[in-house]
Length: 120
Image (cartoon, rainbow, N blue to C red; front, side):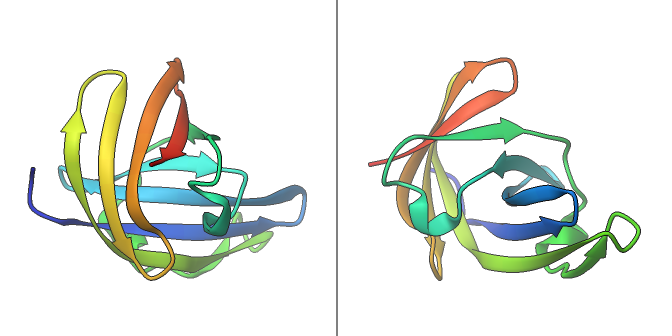
């Protein structure tokens, strides 16, 4: 098991889109990012689709504020550390220690950049 790294969950609100949450995992000097349509309180109750999107710079670990030229807002919904327990091309087993988001979860590849977040 590797040393703990940082994660953040950002809540994104935009005028023209439904609210979504980005799960950002610190990896190799960047934040690997997954977009989820349900809030962290729902994670682990059932499998939730997590779309892998573009990586973000580490400065987004603490970013809150305006996005999309003022047409949206980002706020931190949760943050903490995580440990990668096991990883291969199709699965990642992760232990999270956040304020809201805690416990062991799996990110399982469904197809292309589509993953599912599953709780144990």
